[in-house]
Every structure is written in C-alpha cells, then in structure tokens.
Length: 103
Image (cartoon, rainbow, N blue to C red; front, side, top):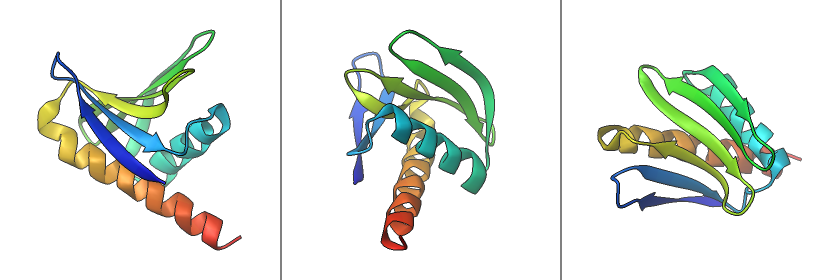
C-alpha cells in the first residue's frame, strides 16, 4: 500500500490510495480521514458507479472519490495544498497498515 500523486493538465491533483481501491476500502479510508485527522465531512454525493465525499482538512477543501475504474483517491484543485493532502493520505495508509499488522 502506498500513495501516488498525479497532476492533471488543468492543474488539479489526484492522490491515489494504491492497493486500496474497492468500495469497502473507501469506507475505511473515509473513517480514518475523519476519525484520526482534523477533517470534517461537508457533503456526500452518491452516484450509480461513483461516490464523492467533500471534506475539509482545517480550511483546505478536497474530495475523497471512489471511481469504479480508478479506485479511491483524493481530488483537489488547490495545488498549494497538495503537500498537506499527501501527508494526510500517507497518514491514512500508515494507520491502515498498522491495523493489518495488529490483526
């Protein structure tokens, strides 16, 4: 498990949770983001094949997205906050790894 970051042509960013790409793992990632970090849910958007949850890390807005083809990732249009969001994603990965090790 690790993260990978993609910068899109429109200067938005996607931070992928590699090897954590299922719908069930989306719920686990969301739980970790909210319960173990300074994040709050602003809005949830359920679609037929995808799900978006709009969140804030302090004052930084971002989306946690489950896409049926691409898996689970953080989406942001705010490039200046990408380091904070990468750190958040890495914290989630480390927490999930720790949970698996302790089982």
